Length: 187
Image (cartoon, rainbow, N blue to C red; front, side, top):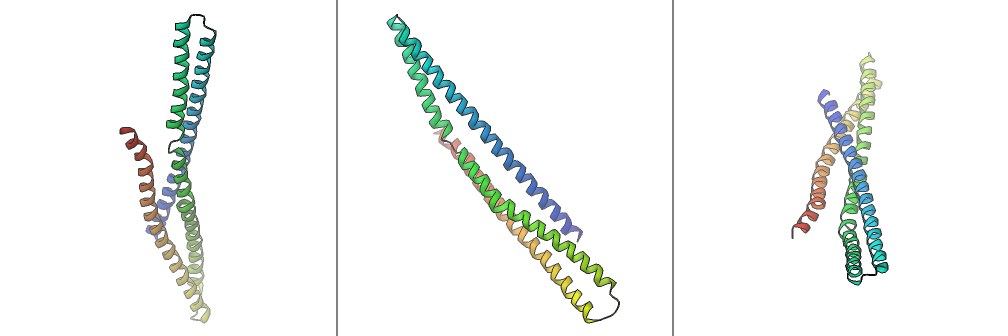
């Protein structure tokens, strides 16, 4: 019983850890997107300012240089948007949401069910132990107690299976999402 409780606590801690990491990753991606949007806005405004200055410049060669710089700034803003904003951040957020929806939430529910089953089992065990005679009520309590023990065992088995599948899925998805942009950049 102590090892089951310990395993339940470790699963609960693992779920909380994964949930915190998911929230931290979502927050990081949101901040990164905001910073990139601000950078894009700045580059666009900077390029526009250079083009405005070039339009007012009387010296033709200097006006051409300023206009070229403005064009470069516009291209930089456009290309940085394509590179930086159309990146896999949204895909990472989708994976985090999928992990949350498909793994963390169902496993939390299983843990809650497990806790309820353990409480019912303890209550039934206490009631069974308090019964004195070998009556049908005692046998009924024994069957109910056995059912709750099987329920706890089944939930534990489900949790183990879900945790193993979740770990494989999470690692596979995050590797793909984190490594693919790096391999794209290294070409």
